[in-house]
Image 1 (spheres, helix red, strand yellow):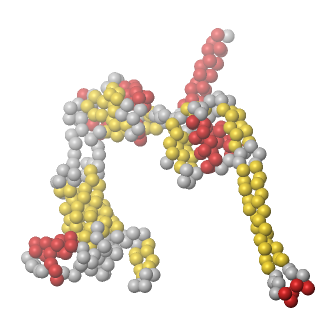
Image 2 (cartoon, helix red, strand yellow):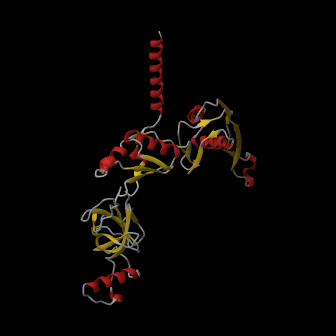
Image 3 (tube, rainbow, N blue to C red):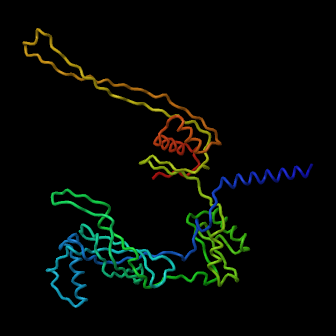
Length: 372
């Protein structure tokens, strides 16, 4: 008999644990944390787009005049800056993102944005432009055809049609990487994981998951960082070690939060937000004004006196007070129950936003309320 009771207890525990596991979100470590040092770098440069069909910068844009004159001078052509016509040229800012671990000779996409009064840079060609990082070093060089995917058409009378943004374009694979940015990961025998959303509980669970597989190599240094010692047999195979860590399942923990957008009436919330025992009354007053037109007709004997038929307006004001809907919820209710009950009585999204704000002000909503 005891054996059957023990077996039944084990099955019940497994069932309950399975239910709790199903209600929690499980994800991989790589989806909520990244290895410190593996990062992209922003690049920026100033250049010229040539070959425009009269849609470039005007002669009032001094930086274009000076840039064209300087470029011609480098090619051995000297010309008076005042005599230049730049309607086929546009000054642009070129931006790009240098991904981690790219090598010399790899290509990356660049974004080309007009900085003058050009109408469009569609169909132009970006002239060779060095791209610098924040430290002032050149890491890539961009050049190539610019595609905006848009246009502007019209006449001098002001009738124009525009699609997308013809003053911002893209040059796919338009930049060649000249320098590599590489961090010597694990050179001191350790790596660090940086959490996307710092949290004490999540950091502790990540360290526990790593230690369960690699025998006590991880330590949660703070809510946003977990330090990991590289085992000796992985020193020459860091990629496999990091890949093994990234694939470990983890249950992240977050604070209870309700996010509301008053402009669109959008409400996003977690289903585990706790609410105390509350009573909610929802109702309102609607006022309508109706206008009726009447005709005032003079008597037949007064027609000769100059009396005329006139139209008069009578306004009727109607006030209707809706019946208030009262909802009582137990302390075991959550936000899902509240919203479901409010929807059942016909509350609009904006009504629900106001009610949630009132519940928070009353101290019955145990969650962070964020309005965007």
